[in-house]
Amino acid sequence: MGPSQRWTVADLCAARGRHKFVMLRVETMDEAEAAEKAGVELLSVPPSMIMDRRFSEVAPKTFAIPGDNFYKIGDTSDLLRWAFPLYRDGADAVYCSGSLRTVRALSENDIAVCGHVGLVPSKRT
Image 1 (cartoon, one colour):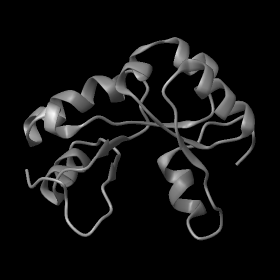
Image 2 (image 1 turned 30 degrees about the vertical axis):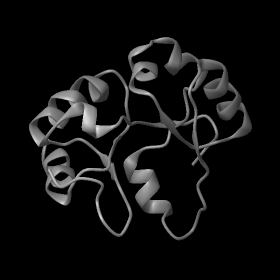
Image 3 (image 1 turned 180 degrees about the horizontal axis):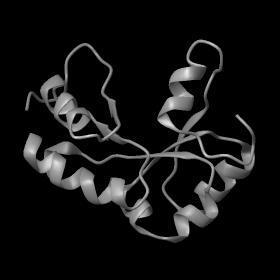
Image 4 (image 1 turned 180 degrees about the vertical axis):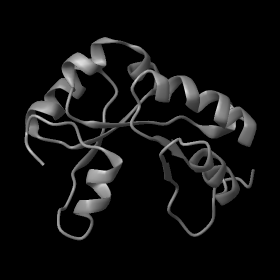
């Protein structure tokens, strides 16, 4: 992966076990820009950052994963409606701490998803 390219899901899968990725949660454009300059490959971001066109200017190479409290978003169908505009506007994946059924629904609708890893999902939807 060259430094001028943006990471893709295929790149992440191909590098599995051979590359340790750096992921960071950022909340502002200044933080996103600093993370990009520092070489952070994966950014967890508020959904509003994806919807702001400046994000792709300040962090053009990072793999962007917006996430939100899914208690606010709703059930599986609500999460799908939430994810499509984010994906359309530049999200590389979305974060979902919902159930496996919800994660599967996102994936089956061609939305790359970073699921919650833990002993018990925070809510079964």
